Image 1 (cartoon, rainbow, N blue to C red):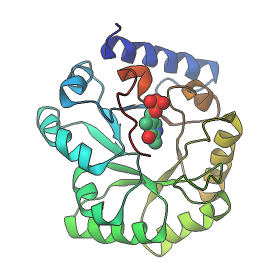
Image 2: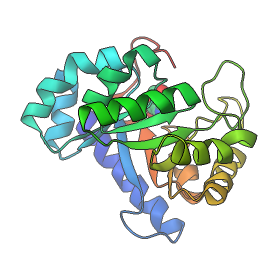
Image 3: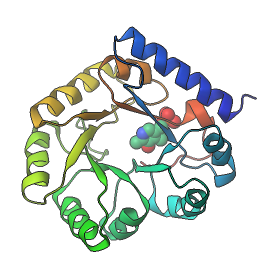
Length: 226
Ligand SMILES: *Cc1c(COP(=O)(O)O)cnc(C)c1O
């Protein structure tokens, strides 16, 4: 079996190749290693290999394993990539450095309040439901530009990027292109798009970060909720 560290190196090599292919600079793309469902013991070697940016999709699961890892690796950066429930905002602001799933007014308001209270300023992304899938989180594409504006003007949030998860059964390219177009209209710099199956495509469409789980850590024993 290939180890997570070997697979990490393989993913990084492929990212570098995709950057060259797309005529983008080296380090144009940040790798977010998605460690949901994996234990601190499984994550540790990947940290030791130099990876510092990780994604988790559940606040409670992340609380169970990251505080101890952060003591050993204080320079790590933790991204929340799963839906944020408003009763978890306080915990999320205390634990995460980046929240990629701002998708409604209520969460924007509570994040603003909680960051002020805790004196923490997280980097924030708005999640866009590019496929308008009813079961999926994220703001509707046609509402996204106005929502980013409201986050900034009404809630004083510095929205840094957009994030999307294209429908599983569709060609992701048009979804990545749509996210890039919305980002340009909204005046947002960063694009979090691309997962294990399509990160090279996402890089061709301008991704500034890719969220890769399975291709590094292997298959997940259970399906973590979206
Ligand atoms: C699980 C997850 C990923 C990683 O998916 P893989 O296919 O395992 O690479 C990326 N983004 C989000 C939002 C996820 O929930």
